[in-house]
Image 1 (cartoon, rainbow, N blue to C red):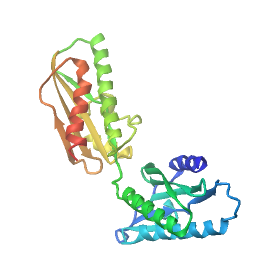
Image 2 (image 1 turned 135 degrees about the vertical axis):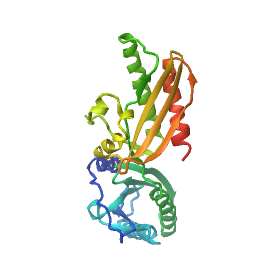
Image 3 (image 1 turned 60 degrees about the horizontal axis):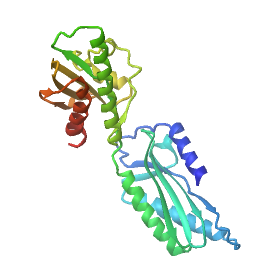
Image 4 (image 1 turned 180 degrees about the vertical axis):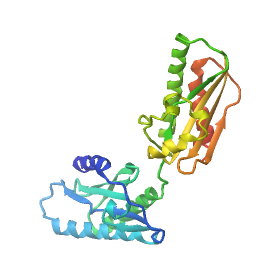
Length: 290
């Protein structure tokens, strides 16, 4: 089974992005190759013909279940409009035990939506039918999972009302802001709701100057150029050396419309507490509220 999942990893790198569908074609495209089959049970009897027949029936039933109802349509590949790809393999390990490894890939996001190993007992028509029913239910659940939103999280910026001195203070501020940005990105990425887009290639002046908060929503267009669906900017506002507020804003990258925002209100704490406060704010207002 190891070989099958090395192939899975490679697929994530080489799968092309599915082309958009016309308005009349509303069913979501799903590509699915026949699963591989390996018999390592060591049984003396040659059961190749029976296994080929059962695997063929398994795949036919799985394709039928997925396409039933019209929500999904089976296509040959991503070039033919596949939004998802299903791949798998079955291995017989002993007389009574077989393993099935199944994965569902989001083609556009190049992300695994499901990667599971199942075991089923028996090697007859009935056991294969039971296995297909269970696998079908799991695959359908994975396909129904919303694709993560491509989000460009720009570096958090600082508004300082304390007229802090330059030098060492500016250096420590930059370090704390970097921790805030990194921690917020980690929380959003781990939520499963978002696919983070690399903003390292953004070279607009507002990005370089850390002044996106003052550019009248220009971050949305920048995010769209980077391939993101949405943009997020965040600001730490230092009121005093021990008081601060936090805020963030999310825009639709295509329209520039504000989709979400959050503000912490006045908080007490030293600079090192920015990170904890920012993660809590984003978690409360953006991740856990949806």
